[in-house]
Amino acid sequence: MGFSRPTDRLLFLVYADPPAAAAAVEIGCGLRDEYDLKGPPIQPRHIHSTLWHVGDDFSPPPPALIATLKTCANRVSMPAFRVSFDRVESFNGGALVLRGEEGVIGLELLYENLSAALCMKGTRSFVPHVTLLRDKRRLLSSIPVAPIEWTVTEFALVHSLLGKTTHCVLARFPLISPPPSGRGR
Image (cartoon, rainbow, N blue to C red; front, side, top):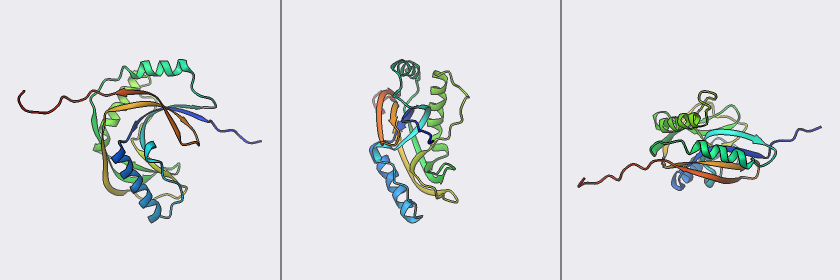
């Protein structure tokens, strides 16, 4: 008797902007070729960093849960920030990912703010990363890459249909834009 797998995932995430997503896919494809990896690259429109994995299920998320999550996420208030990933590593589960050091501090702060808004502070560990592809083969060490950077201006609540490469954005939560820089003030 086989086990069925969940079909639906609910998560909060930060999407890369189109230039950063294209650069990330290019790095993933280059490393895939160089290290003879077989996993397909993540599509540019799905390049993201997960902030909070709410959960997986066998059916779409119920409207009441979505409403509660939106209410909580609307409490997050922080300024937009730059994010930068400058190396590639393999995770134990088979993911080839972008990682960073100081360049991901903004994501860590956003995670902390979202965790507090969800009343879940300190219940999960958070490792900022962007998945490029999944493969059983692993890189043996971290590889420096040209930084993949973008300005994070919002985060989103997304319903992902597992195995179908489909993301349904349920809500977007804008961050506070910095005041315009300029003279004469």
